[in-house]
Length: 477
Image: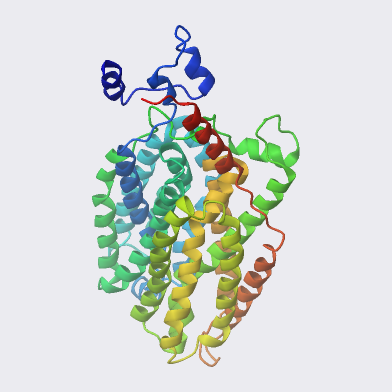
């Protein structure tokens, strides 16, 4: 009974990370002690950190599509051109390009917790620099400069919180919760986008809208106190390993890696496919969020209706992800690649259908199309992030590459589609029909990339084997 009491009392202690180390600590007895067979551990405070990261991700993401549904109102109120309004969203995407390199370095240097504080400070700066740009005394160029700077700081916060999702889930959650945790933080970004598209057109003038965004951003900052850096004892074998850096991934691709855990040729091929497919489809969804009013208003849809359609895309996806992510943790644990091969062609077909579905008085058809697109897209979001980690064994580095590529493609999509906007003499004026054709062609080509895709989950397989060995070798207490 005394041994059992000590076992319960030492609940939060750190334990060895391998069976061999466990035994060596108790070499003086024939039977290993019960404590030595607890190399991995889950902590309840992981949920508080997950909640904090979720809220901050939601709020940071709201600023990115905020001006999409009110693009025409912003243009009229401040005197900006539509292309200048589009750049208020594009600047967020551009920040991700240097973030590919900087954020993994920041995580390795500062840790998860300090990175979150840096992002929180950036979120605070963005809120009130952006609001300073609403002063009536400013010139058009002065107001635009402050709005762009505010959006830049918002992008810094958003990129850090997004990239940290797989790293946090790997550090704090076990095999039966890792994909779900990645999903929770991953879908926080589209939830923020949905809320941004819903709130911004309902807030009166553009200036009032920006003030409301500043208040929301400031109110979320206490959630920083909930996020821990890493647990005293890792939850899985993967979490216990020394992290692979972004540089190690580049070394894998250029053949100079000396790492025993380096990527195979097959894994490198599959990772390139994941990056490209994720990037193209993320860019399509992001571009719709930014250009929703410009897509739909020429056909007679109001700002409110455009915002609701964008919200329908994102909210339907959120519901689908909440339902499916636990299934991938507990039931379909080895079916991430198969799921991608099923859902990506469905999405490609639906984006293609917009060439014919987007027309006047067709809201009854558009809402279901965008809802199914959202359900497929956001279900695939945690799947893609987890596949990136499975193939590279580098959580923050693979996440940075995926998000960075998606945002780079978003900038390319927005610029290309804006250039394809019809003139005022077209029928209807300023329509985006050619943009739908370009987007559909790219996405249907991306679907074909998945034909040779395999997506083997070696990280999960290794974790499952080691966990099974621990259960078999652990003594009965």
